[in-house]
Image (cartoon, rainbow, N blue to C red; front, side, top):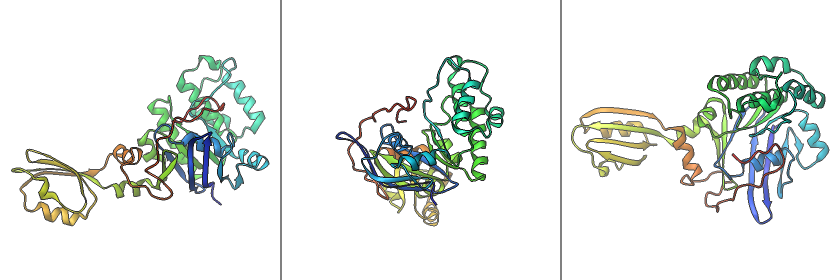
Length: 320
């Protein structure tokens, strides 16, 4: 059984499109990254999966339960942890009292363990918390009932680098125990760090969905070369050479072709320096964010821009 499955999932706010014909599957036990620029439809998708809003068309299931069936969704939510991008709390209560309250609502299987890991100041009123301490408390509340599926929207917001690493290690440990993660983030280094696969959404459409490493391999390598003499762009009309830029015997370009062909070509030059490195993750994803990459799957890279999504009363989060 898939942890999440959507088929032609669509949501309109009046005449404004938020998401259109989203079809994807999140496998049990994987960390799935859900990425896209602001207003792309990420938060609308999350809200629909959690039953906060009704889809206009299409279908979705979480943990095998239909998100439009109230009784089904209640059963599913017993096994779901949700971390919104901007959690809203009662500012006048202590963190400890809020944990007890959530424990009464959804059970408390492991708050003591989580408090050791994330260490929010639970004896103080939440109104005195920093952004980072609010996020640490939210992480305890997200995992305290030991969910099977965790939906996280910008989970490291406000956390210092040490706590971010602690969270990444925790996610890896939880995944080894079989927990599934649906992970929305703008921090591409953490996507590379924890995600198995990614789906990229733009203008409400899914434009690609594949493994992070496969996506990087397909995007090619960044090549920097320095030779004696000058380089003419016309001399590098090789299959797989893209974005060629040269100056005074130095050149850089993206390369997606055969390395043997490149090395054979370089033999006609006196090479002073050669560097081949993985493309920056930011460059790879920006090709999909700005529409320069060809769409795959059910995506439509030529769709019109989507306005920012209509907020819902779910902790004040906006599409990030």
